Length: 187
Image (cartoon, rainbow, N blue to C red; front, side, top):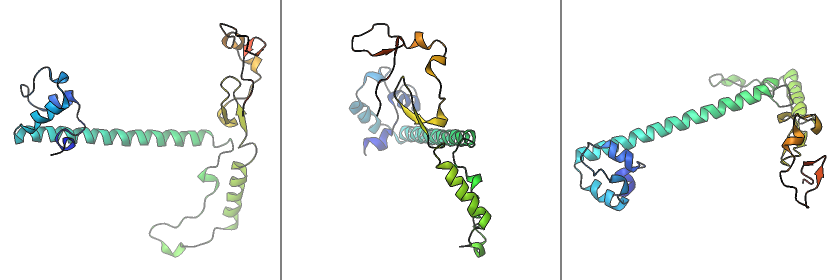
């Protein structure tokens, strides 16, 4: 029987917690996996059933955690889309194509109305306009980002900026501007 089928993805602590006390030694954490596998193979069917149950429980928890994480990512993405809706990003609401329902096949291949087509064109033009696709470069980290994700400021208007960007030790190769170390070149 392969090792994966015997202990699955259980850690040594999880394996020891899955079986009744006294089955494995107290210094189980220091035992090599090869010896642990030999010990597990020598166990009764009841103990192996307990280990298999622990494996299944861990897998179910892992799957629930993955589903929860995907849901959180989806909700965060939806929230970001809602927050940026007025800033040049296209939303589904701007372009409402009449989609046929799953049960009503009579509307299959039905052309959208002129008004819906115009809404889609406007939404596309707005989403691909210069304003929507504008990029800014951070003068501190030289990272290029979408303009709507950041704020464009005159650098000296940022509070305490001279203290924050002043290097502790000035190297001769530094090209300082107003005493601040900023990115000089970017691609």
